Structure formats: structure tokens, C-alpha cells
Image (cartoon, one colour):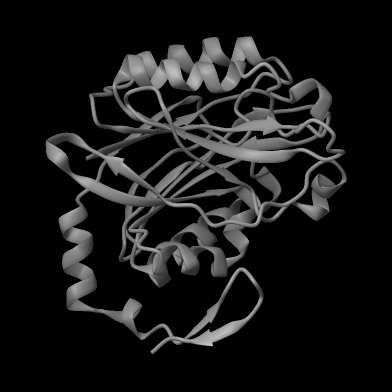
Amino acid sequence: MRVHLVQMNIVWENRHENFIKVDRLVQSAPINPGDLVVLPEMFDSGFSLNTHATHDGKGETLAFLEDLAARCRCTVQGGRTVLQQGEKKATNRAPIVSPEGRLLAEYSKIHPFSFGREPEAFRGGSDVTTYNWAGPNDEQLPVCPAICYDVRFPELFRIGLLRGAEAFAVGANFPHARQDHWRALLIARAIENQAFVFAVNRTGDDPHLHYAGGSIVVGPTGEILGELGDEETVLSADIDPDALRSWRQQFPAWRDVRLIEDPDGTKKERR
């Protein structure tokens, strides 16, 4: 199985220019049927609080992702802003599209970034999501999506693990000022859950912040399977689900999880 992380300098609030950029980058990568493509958070607009401008009201971003997945015959995890009719705040989402061009799942970011004023324009989601990445030769890998600031909250990842996730796919606009945190947190999330982490960050600049990329693929023992600097490119990495399952059998720390923080706020002891 192979994953591709599309690290891009997002054009500010310009959906169609970003579609063109994604197409160009994807065409440059060795993508085959059954692969997984992961795009940054809000890849179609950048991290903008101007939700009336970035809202995918006509479904253009979702339609682009569906077309991309069908053309590549691969699974695609993207990003978009959704502002429901009658709602004052939007949701920051990661739609996942199947190789047939159908929406498999859509995760809403649970943790809006208060330091960056995200809660002023976005409300947090409430559901941890998982989906099955169907690779070539009938291979299956359960994946839990997450978005940017979510990486600072390990309970989300733990719930994903207990729901069967063997990998976590993160799309982000994580600023250069805290780049060392980005890398450390992702490696920790992989080690503590004995899982793969596929994390794609944007690069370049928006009107407010500088981004340094650093997209990374981490294996279940914390090994780095691929990592980028700040260039605009695609990181491709081969994934071996059998190696992950073998490691979990050899060192079954994941089975010893005791206290679980459920989404309803209650703590339960795992038997």
C-alpha cells in the first residue's frame, strides 16, 4: 500500500487556483489505483475565518475531490469549509472519497484552535471518524482522520485506536513557529497507539502566518518512513500493514489501555 501527502502552498481564498495546483502536483506523483492521497486542511482556501467566502456551498470542492479520486482510482482525504443553512458557525471538515468517486465519510474537526480565533467562525465536531482504505490486492487499512490542532489531544487518537484504527491521517495548516511541536506530537501519536501516522502540512505563507511544511509519515514504532522540508511537492511512502500487526503482536501495549475518555465525557475502565 502507498500513501501520498500533497504538500502545497495554498492560494489564499482561491478555490479554483488550488484545484489546478493539486492536479499538477498529483500528476507529478507515482500514484496507482488503490493508493491513498491526503491533502492539507482547508486545501481549497487556506486557514481563513472568512467562512462566507470559503464555504463549499455549491459543493465544488467535494465535486473536485470525487473527480480526483475517480480519475486516480484511489482514496482521497481532503478538506473543506461547510456552513449549514441557518447556522452562524461553520465546520472545518475532512471529506474522504472512495476510488469510485463516492463520499465514504466526512470528519468535522473536534478541536477548533482557540489561540488562532478559530472558534469565532467554526464550531467543533463531536464524532471520531474511521474509514477503510481499500488498497490493491484486497488489502484493507482502517484509518482515523484528524485535522491540525487535533494532534495535541491524544484522547481523540486513543478513541480511534479502540475503534479499530491502524493509521491516522492528518491534514494541517500548522505554523512554522511551532514546527518542533508538530514533529514531536506526530511521532508520539504513532508510538503510543502503535499505528501509522500520515500527516500533511501546508507550506508557504498566508496573509498572517508562515508555514514550513514538514509533512511526515511515521511508522508504528516511531520510525520515520518519509519526511519533507518546506518544498511544494508530494511525499510518497510505502506502507506495510502486516509489519504493523506483527509489531502489535510482539509488543501488545495497546491491549493494556485501561482508562478511556469517551466522547460523552465519562471515564470507563477497559476490561
